[in-house]
Image (tube, rainbow, N blue to C red):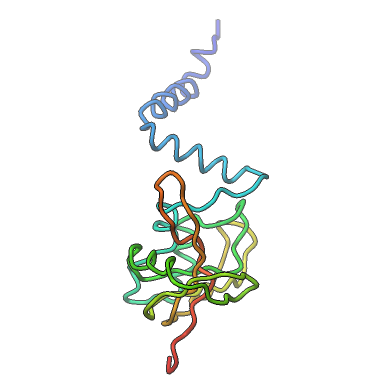
Length: 179
């Protein structure tokens, strides 16, 4: 007599192994994974940025040696997208979060791209402008990396759970004269 256990033992073993592996995952990682899956499959509004998210996705210290494909690699590695669709443009900044956060307390300046109120960094900084060149969805997004040195224009917002005003989006990098 042929039973499921004898005829499909390898498949059953792999199914049981998968359950055991999933049980060993930390709650923090599991919560992060569930948030990621919700983000991918959501049709509603996008969650507002957080300090942790901004630090992870925008601040990039590894600019030397500057790679031509930094944007393509970093955007894929950091999983930056909107419902799996590629961003038309993106910025990476080489600055400490605390230094960038100081810009949130400066006077408003005019932005680019139709945004009305931005803040400008006090000093010129180094950054990378990522210009979309091809691909429709992740992981096929391709970008041209353009190194820029200048003043970053950012928007800021209040994050309730930490009680701080934080940088939310990088609008552009205004290149310094002579660069």
